[in-house]
Amino acid sequence: MENKDDKLLQKILFAGLGLISEAKENLQKKVDELIKEKKLTKEEGKKLVEDFMKKVEQKKETYEKQLKEFVDKRVKNMKIAKKKDLEKLEKKVAELEERIKKLEEK
Image (cartoon, rainbow, N blue to C red):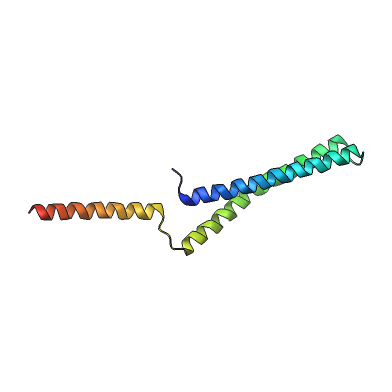
């Protein structure tokens, strides 16, 4: 199950992917214009777009890691309880409730 941090990170990554997609489309349009104007061959244009996408893919993991570290740091600074912290507290409360119940039965 995803937590809020993961969902936020996912939204940010999707926004980034949207920007990459838009950049690719703009690059492709410009390449198409250059091919039409005979300033670039189809092969050169194709290679240019492919090289761009390869560079994006190479940087993707680095950006994801940096973004996750950024979000984790911000969440930590906000002193928000994490899911595992809440689960630990829920378990402790359940244990205490059980002890109280046993004491009341005596």
